[in-house]
Length: 198
Image 1 (cartoon, rainbow, N blue to C red):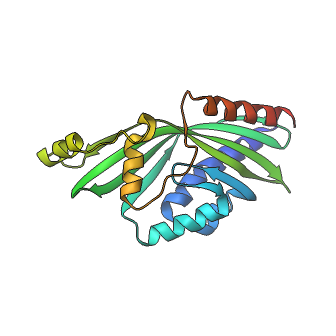
Image 2 (cartoon, rainbow, N blue to C red):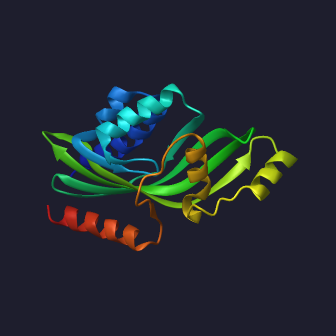
């Protein structure tokens, strides 16, 4: 374990967000190993398929999004590492004729591996904590929208994000993980055991 290894992992996590938000798809592909996987609200499966799905969605995008990535907490052992990173997902979209901003808070859990001298992400799981929805310009129409819209179909941790995604034509993935759930503890435990077994 070296400082260089730790910084390489941290840079990789930061680069993922920049490449994703800027549509730099070839560079985005290089942040994961070829057999890597990712699980977020709208996708669960191979990372290469996530990139292709993101490219298709960008062609007729009904929303703008940006990932703000915090300082990753990285634990390394040999050629394995795990990282936990606080994130904010900022989305802008028109819902029922009203321009709104959606902020979703959570964290990324990453398994990283160094293969052939290169660190790449092997698996990413997003854990959702809370979110909010605000009007870009406050109005009575937004107040009516919030009063009349039933958001209760979605868990509180990602309620407005889910509504925004579905309204934009996306389908939600199965097994979306929320903070404090048994699934969140299980994936954290699995990651710790994986890095310690190196």
